[in-house]
Length: 253
Image 1 (tube, rainbow, N blue to C red):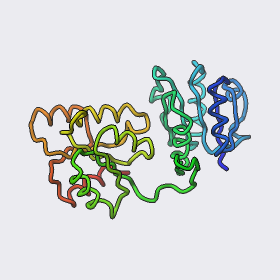
Image 2 (image 1 turned 120 degrees about the horizontal axis):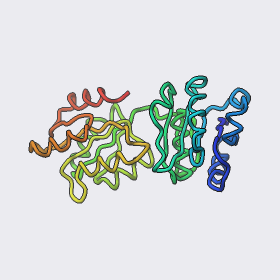
Image 3 (image 1 turned 120 degrees about the vertical axis):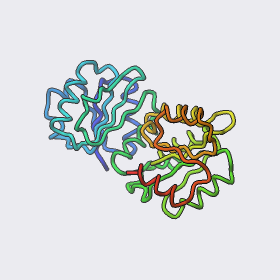
């Protein structure tokens, strides 16, 4: 069982999260002042650090300094409020790091820890599977069911493909598995491509996922509006299979 070192100020939320995580991990609790005043990392040898920034204050600077200078290879998951920012210069050098806004939910926290460890969390069974997904995942969002089926046929030999006929469905799928890249239609009812992209980028776990617009909308004003949001790409339908695959490969790590 992998070790999670949970660092923060002990409170009700802290206790609730740690209790849930003990179902899947060996959780070691460490209050902030003890973490800074002791050699806890050398003793506990955790596989991942879970850092609750709520109430930590200026001590977070010292924590990040310690991690980036002496433990940069140690995966780090930060829990923060909507108002809490983690300045990039504080964490430069830390190789594997994720942030989640509170309240995130215990299952989302578990999923994020699993991603840092190369595991995956199955919500339907409530189990941690110590095997990463073997293939990259593409999420296609389009209100046209025929277009979705075509994309699935074009890509399924090489990728795991998730299909969503609306932005709401896409957000649900992202909650189950964060894709490696998103193909997004522009002209959709209720919630168009721009709105969908804004919603996706508000998700901590998906804000950095590359998004390629794949659409039949050719109007210059619409294209400019989309490009102002800095998507990874913009392709016009119908896209040839080899062109689409090549564009995806440019952006998937």
